Image (cartoon, rainbow, N blue to C red; front, side, top):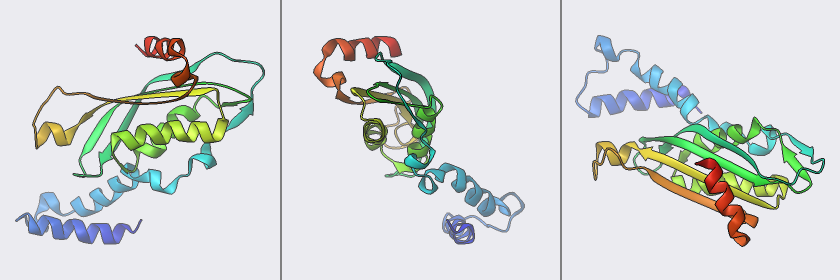
Length: 183
């Protein structure tokens, strides 16, 4: 990510909006925006397989769930934020993942230009690829600034998406248990 190029482009945008990028309040804005993009889009510099720690499972065969994982992402259609909570669960087979890596996985994919549907599926697909579990369940609940501040302008609309694999699809009791546990 070339921060100097981003700064120059932000300065151009400010000018196109009718602002004076040289006025006191905007002098450091291009630099601030470029630095914020480093964090907001830091997921492009990370690969899930590089941060996921996998261990041999020692016989545990019940559901493992990380819930209420805060995430912040940016809508690829309007480049406006969407944010919410992720609920990630899986039933292990031969491997388990380091528990802190479930939120890390959400973080990596959310820190890219996204749509909520793809984000949900990327989390589920990566867990499936890395662990070969008996099943995966992922639910994201989010609010989208593009729906709040423009377009339909609905302030209290929450969007839910889900992705299920394995036993979460084949066994209704498994899916029901997961949904009950995440509240």
